[in-house]
Amino acid sequence: MNYVTEEYLNTYLRSVQPMYDGVLGEIQKESIAANVPIIPHETARLLSVLLSIKRPKNILEIGTAVGFSAGLMSRYLQPGGKITTIDRFEVMLKDARKNIKRMQLEDTIMILEGDAADILPTLTDTYDVIFLDAAKGQYGNFLPHCLRLLPVGGLLIVDDVLQGGGIAQPRFYVPRRQRTIHKRMTNFLWDISHHECLESSIIPIGDGVALCYKVKEIQAEDKGE
Image 1: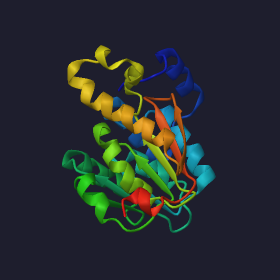
Image 2: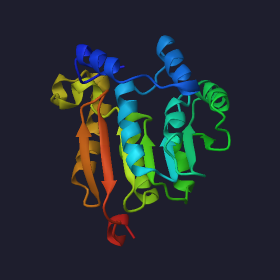
Image 3: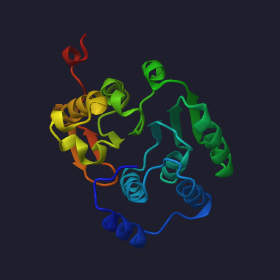
Image 4: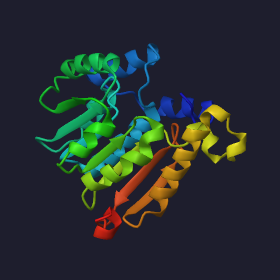
C-alpha cells in the first residue's frame, strides 16, 4: 500500500496507538501478516474517533474486503444499528463472511454481493455514515449515489484519495497507464471540495482520507430533475 507520510512517522503512530483487541484485533494482525489489504492502523484510529462522535444508526460501506473495517465500525453503532457492505470479489467475501461470523456480527452486518455501480442505484434507505473504499477510478461515479443516500448531517468518509502523493503531480509526470485514474481522482477531489452541499477536508493520513459532511440537500435542478 502507498502512504503519503514517511514510514518513520507511520511506525511511530502505530507504536503509540494500540492495536485493537478481541477478535477484531486478531483479524487485523492476521491481515497485516498475510499482506491482505485492510485500512492502515492510523486510518482505523481516525475512523474510531469519527464514529465515536457520530454514533451512527446505519452505515453503508462500499468495499468490504475481508470485513475488518465493517467489524471496526460496528463497535460504534447505536444499539440495534446495522451495517450494509458491498463487494464484488468472491475471494474477499469468502473471508469476510468467515470473519463476520468470528466476530458474531451476522445480525449486524449485511453483505450485498455485486458491483457497487449496479447495487447503489437500487438502495433506498439513508445512512448516517458512508465509508467508500472501493475502485478508485469509480469514486466520481459513486458520488451522486452517496449524496442521495446521505441525509443532512451525514458523513461520507473516502479512503485512498492521494495515490501515494502522486495526485499532486502534474499529469505529464504520471505514468501513462495511471493517467486515467489520476484524472478521475483529481476531478473527484475537486467535486467534493467545491460541492455546495458538502463541507469537506482531505487529510494526509494513510493514503489520504477525505471527510465530507453533508450540510444541505441537493436542489432539484442539481439532481437533473
